[in-house]
Length: 176
Image 1 (cartoon, helix red, strand yellow):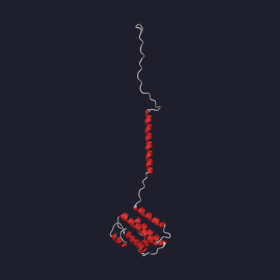
Image 2 (cartoon, one colour):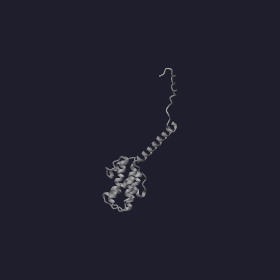
Image 3 (cartoon, one colour):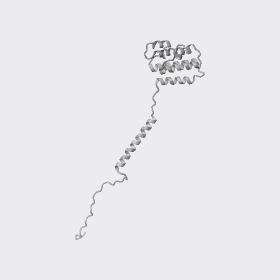
Image 4 (cartoon, one colour):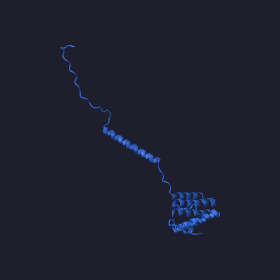
């Protein structure tokens, strides 16, 4: 190097520039779109879960008993009176056992009627209706009495009113 030569001036230093934003949208718009997307996906997942895991409320004892009676009603044409008497009696006794926690399924008709004599769960009309109902079903079950379709329908009507807790009418609820 030549000492007489003028020294070269260094190139000027420019300030350091911050990061270059390469996303074409502003930051606030990107965050808002992300939040909206998360909310939409959450709502879809919640709706899908609700649709797939729809929990049906279990039927009540009353609904089960009424459904069993309707099945009997639909098959009453040409039904065997003995089998009908057993089935309708079992349906009502099972309803009483599950709804009122009484030993209707393990007692004879007379024992059961004696056990509910002073029970406030049943009105006098219901007790009377139960007496008529159990008497008629016992005739079908044990005496193998013959019953026509009309008599079996009357028995189903008594049973349905007992389950619904309705007062017995004089026609079907009274002694025959």
